[in-house]
Image 1: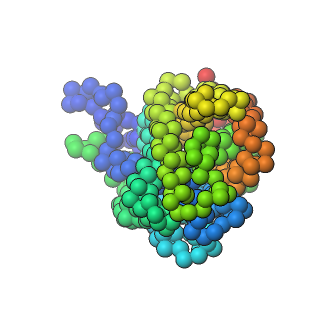
Image 2 (image 1 turned 120 degrees about the horizontal axis):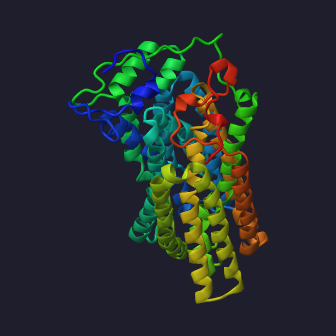
Image 3 (image 1 turned 45 degrees about the vertical axis):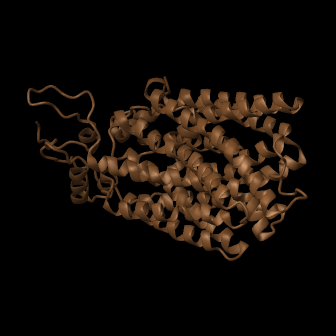
Length: 505
C-alpha cells in the first residue's frame, strides 16, 4: 500500500483488503472504535435515565419535600437547565482543550452530582445536584458526538452516532423499569426516589474510568498543530490484527494565518455559517418543546387521564401509599409508550443512509404533529376511546420523534460545522434546543392546569409543523459526506465548494 502522506479521514474511510487485493465492503470497527462507541452510548443512556425518570419521581419528591407547584416545575426544569449550561459552556471547551479531556471530566462531574442527588438533605441541595447532573450531560451532547464522528468512517458515521443516540431511548425505558421495580419493592417509602437515582452511581463511575483509556480525536489534534499526538491517536484508533494500515503518514494541514480561538461569533460571521447554525439550532429547539414535555409528563398525563387520578400532585390523598400507587401506574404505562422511542431510533439507524437526515427530520416532524393531533382528539371522548387515542397518539409521537427530529437534530448538529468550531457549534445548538426543553418542562404542568391538555397539544402541533418548514428551508446534506469537506471558507480560497453548498437530495 502507498506510504505517501494522506488525510486522517482517508485513513478512517479506507477498507482493509485480503492478500489477493480484494477489499472488504466495509471495515469493521476496531477495538478502540468499539470502546468509544460504548462509552459515548453510556452518556446518552444516563441522560434518558435521569431526565425521564425524573418525571416518575416527581410526585414522590413533591411529597418528600412538600413542594409547591412552582417548585415542581423547578424540579423538572433543573436537569434541562443544567444541560443548557453544559452544552453552551463545555462544548466550546472541547474545541480549546481537547475532546478526550472534556469527555472524561463531564462524566466524573456527573458521578459526583449523582451521589449528591441521592443523599440530598434539602430541596435546594437536590435542585443544585439536578442542575449539576444536567451540566455534565449537556457537555456530553456535543462531545460524545464529536468523539464518535471524528473517529469513524464517513460511511458508518451516521449509523454509529445514531446507534449511540439510541441509548437515550433505552435509558428512558430502563429508567421507567427501574422506577417500577423500586416502587414495588418500597411501596410505603416516600424516599424511594433517592434509590432510583442511586442505582446509576456505580455504572457512571465505571464509565468515567473507561473514558481515561480512549484516544484523543486525531482531527482535533491536527487542527491544533499536534501532529505527533494526531499520529499516535490515529495509529491506536486503527490498531487491528492483522495490522491495516501497516503505516500511517498524515498529511500536514495548511498552517492558519494566525492563532484563532473558536468563539460563538464564528457561527454567524458568514452566510454558510449562519445557515448551518439555523439548521442545527432552530429545529432542535422546536423538537425539544414537544419531546421533553410529552416524555417527562407521560406518566402524569396517562395516570390523570384514565387512571386513579392520584398522580396529580394536588390530589386530596397525599398519603405515601397513594402517591406511590399513582407513580407506579404512570410508570408502567410509560414503559410501554417509551418502548416506541427505541423502535423509532432503530428505523432511523436503518434508513438514514438511504433516505438522508434531512428527509427523515422533515417526515418525523410531520409524524409528531400527527401523533399529537390524535392525542388531542382524546379530549372529545371518554372511557375506552379516550384511552385508545391517548396511547395511540403518544405511540405515534414517540416513534416519529426518534425516527426523525429527536435523532436527526442531534446528528446534524455535530456534522454541519468544520472541525475547528465543531464543538462550539454543536454545543450552541444543544444549548439553544434546551431553552425549549427548560421552557416546556417548567411551563408544562402550569399550562396543563391553565389551558388544558387539548390546547397544549395543539400548540405543540404548530411547533412541529414549523420545525418541518425550517428544516426544508435551511437544509444541508451531510449524510455520507467527508467531515474534512465541512468548511465555511470561500471556494476561491480552498479550491472546493465544500459540502455546505450542497442541498439535500
